[in-house]
Image (cartoon, helix red, strand yellow):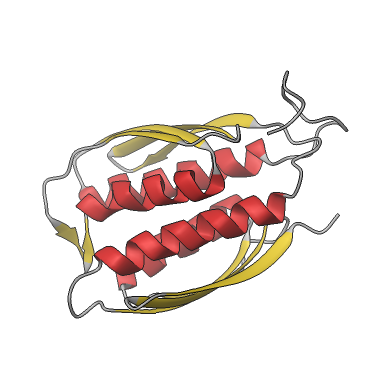
Length: 192
């Protein structure tokens, strides 16, 4: 079963194309026009062993909001489509990842319902050209489109380390949750 998908999204604010192979080797080719965001998405691909290609053009001269939001929306849609019927997946997983002073704990449930809780505070308004307020927005957009639950808590001093630990923990928990363990859909409802 191939769990790979390519999709496009074009609005008056962004033009994005994403290819995701859930069962990849962690290779990535990412260009969103927001360098620190690219670095986080590359980290997500590497630590989740997802092959990920993202090409995004957005109105980043205005700010980074629309690009971050629309990448989150489309990446969630691509993830949902690539999973297919979810038969046999583990469904729920977690990861605890340190990065120097930071510690990120992330749990996910590929439940067919979206919800996001992100407990993280920042000292700065931006890391590189990424607005820290848009980190939560990315995860909310992804969760809504992918129809998953994300519950995360991040502690630490350095904003760069906190955000990077978050993306790594998210990647590891997702990789574990999509692992095929059996041949049934893991739900009392029979669908996810």
